[in-house]
Length: 141
Image (cartoon, rainbow, N blue to C red; front, side, top):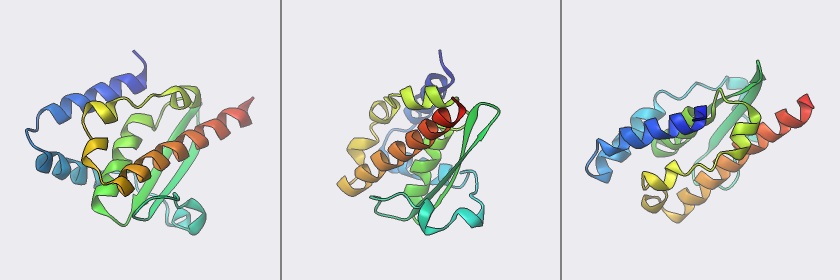
């Protein structure tokens, strides 16, 4: 099982603990408090993910063959969502990130419990993270 699949399975198991979506939302908000803090120099316009209801800044760097993400958001739920994505994708090789199907999002029921604009934002976050991975993969070849 790949590192990403293992992380996804951990999240699925964590979400199974909660009976209702209010508890799951609270858990997502708590996750947001643990997101790797983005360096203030990257909290600029060019690091904002377009198409998100809230402002989300995302930065990626390539270290030892792996992509490391940091992020921030001005909204608690959104910060929690990016924290979930970072938990799964950060520290993984670019090719694994590019190939990740992110099926855990539907398995935990997240997409169906988000507003349309937040759901679009989630897709844009994933897209941007994969674009960073693709750029790092291309630069190393």
